[in-house]
Amino acid sequence: YVQHRTWSHGLGRGRATKRINRRQAANFMEAPEFANELGRPLNCHVTIAFAHTDIEAAEVESVFRKIRDDRFKPWLAHRRRRDRAPQYGPPTFVWAQENGRDGQGNGFPHVHWLLHMPPALLHDFTIRVRCWVGEFGGNVDWSETVVKVDPATTPGGLRRYLLKDLSPRLREHFNIPARWPGTYGVVYGKRIGFSQNLGPT
Image (cartoon, rainbow, N blue to C red; front, side):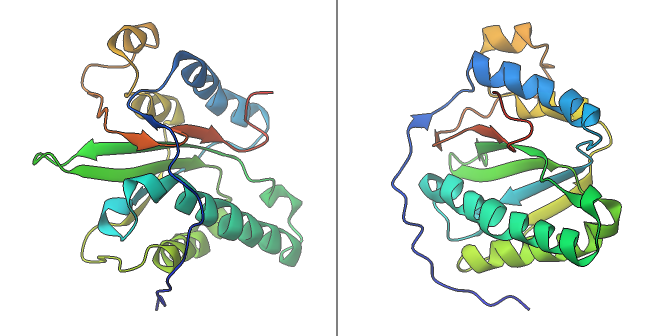
């Protein structure tokens, strides 16, 4: 059961962009290997389709930040303490915001979130991430696939998929396959981001 609430997200519209830049892509490409070196492989891929919520494209970054920072991080810290399992933390993830088109010219704002999830927590996380989206998403159309949680068996390939909104020249440089065309929809605020332990120094 998800109780819907009305939230004022409190942030203005971020800068609008249609492409990922070279610096962002270079940092993003290194993240899965760095996560492996930390012993925290990015083994879980979450897709949140904000298009099926009340959240406008300009609000996606701020709402996802609330889900990530105000719900996921405290939940993980709580489970780490409760289960006496230091191996659960720290939070380790990368994410990419996209706004694809649905074939009729309409935007389809969504977020891909690639993270390390301890296997013992996966079931609880899968339930809770839906609740968090329901909490902040207003009237959510649950008849659609709003939240999808999948194993990330090939994070190296996924990182290239999440970089498909590079310019054609940079797509070639970063070896993005042609079978993954860019969406190039307008995104407000950050297009991609990292947890503190994976982000660029």
